[in-house]
Length: 341
Image (cartoon, rainbow, N blue to C red; front, side, top):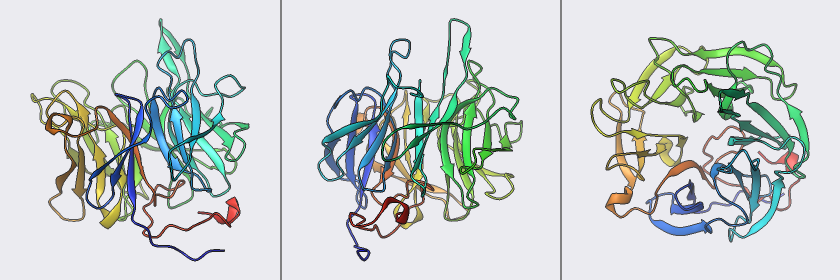
């Protein structure tokens, strides 16, 4: 087994405006170019991003025309961004309809949040799908029969307690949503961890990640024009609502986030979309003081930034299961997959 190697890290962000994965210096935010070229081998809707246990990049790919094509999970070389293979094929059993967030467990099980669809007044329920992380073979869906609400999962993360946390929204209703828990080994539904209410104002939740403080951070969207897009903060053990970070101001242009991730120095990185001047930027929040502040890590598109429609993100040092930032990354080319983190 090789010893840990300290490396300069990079930030990778999927950009749906031109179907690329773009790279930035993780310390300075300097743009380093498109790591995965536009549309590379069918990349037409980059969503979840993680590095697998071999160190290569996995990208969930949500095809725009879901009526004709199901989604895929694509695999790219960690050094060059060159296409390696289609890990999850669109024409095989268990292919996801609308894949969003992905995580890869220590046991090398790839979990994919498949949001499903609602079209022509017909609801297609979503699923959390499981695949072999080496072969892409479909292993089945998590059993969500114990959940009585609409099941349209958007993102997932394995928490400090070992449970799989899944954000789900309602379709087509823009209001409400939940965070559910599952046992990732057995697939058993463990219950509702967070449910939308008037206090937390949780609507259409997507990205979720546990912070260094143990709290759970979730992206949430406005319910109407009198509301704000925001990040909600919950106690990571009890699910109690603690605080919020407003991303925009009522009556002003929208600034919302599909995903979020902790990175170097415990800072929270948030790619921004919307119809205002901040769209295309990446904000870097300091959440460890009483007054939460941010700086602009990547400038908005109107300010010359390279991102048009940023979605999910990962660092090279992001744990693919817990999404925790690791300050050292292992060279695991000589390790078996179940020895990797």
